Image (cartoon, rainbow, N blue to C red; front, side):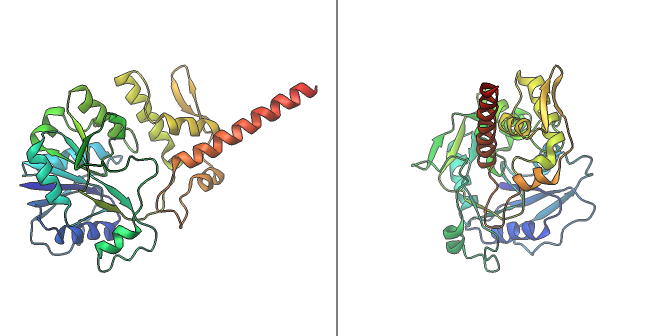
Length: 310
């Protein structure tokens, strides 16, 4: 049996669409387990499979603890984790079921990003396929049905699957990560260190529903810094280094003798620079970092020119 696991805080419409997508599955899941990070349970559509909402106390939004709790409550032999923003394609559960029977590994399916205003009333998957785009900072699907992922840093918890036994064997997600950032990379690193194979699948497709966001996540700067340093304490180097680089170029944070630290408050200009626009299906850290690097290079050249003129 396959248990689909998700966690949710707000975004009731997105979660309802996730459930609607599962209702369209060619191979229905054995159950859906929702780790609820709010005071009230969700009003969800009727399903032919059991849906269990596990009410958790939101003590700092521990995404790791919520995923671990969902996995612990799941009854299935296999676990499929979907982000609350994801609508599963009708073949997603079946694609994972076939791959999990052949490989005891960490499997990652495809994710397509939907633009603002995508028509979701009827869940016409042919339309969603035309509208969804691949994230420019993520690898594309493999040429064949399955291919190894050789860089653990590519692991992303939006859409993945593994056996329940393997999830327990690797210890789940490290609950030392609090707030936003770091726990996915840590989980990928842990799997890699323990010799767990990572594979990309062609298929097991999910559609990420639009919501405004910031990249780099300046609205989560403090937890990003904390979690990057926690990662360093485990593995010898910080993670999320591209975000840290952007924060430094923005004058928000810098490394010190005891690690990275904030040096000024986040301002509206920082939010404006990193804010996802309505026409963008996803926010891009790479685009913002490229702009910051270019501005820094121009500033360096100007400083050199001013020095030479003295």
